[in-house]
Length: 156
Image (cartoon, rainbow, N blue to C red):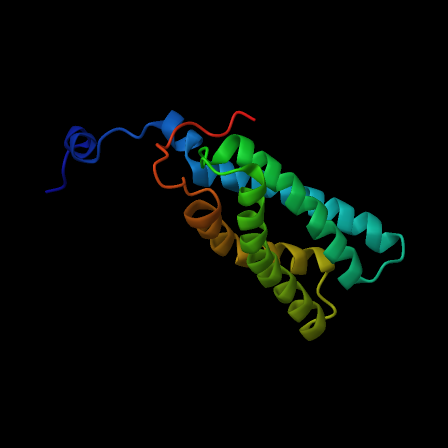
């Protein structure tokens, strides 16, 4: 006999949609989609202007990374209690790893399957790097310094 809907609700509890939407992962993914849009648009413009895939992607990644850092710092993660410059250095370390994964995936696909559209390679690279990036940002870059009580995302 299967449990009644009421019993399932009692056992599972209610899903708090507001809390789910406010959760850092969803904010991170939404900002990541915005960053990916900036990346893809700028890549397209630069590549159409005559830059090679590799150069156009390196430049578009740099700009998209700056955009997502500011937005994640403002809306996604709690205040760390660290100076902004220190936090930026930690962010850069994680981003180098994540963007390295993304870029290497992009180049590998472009080399191994040159007939694959560049945007497919760009998106696959971004998806592959997302888990590494979120984990690094959450546990390293934006982890509160010792003695700092977690609160709402940065207001600055």
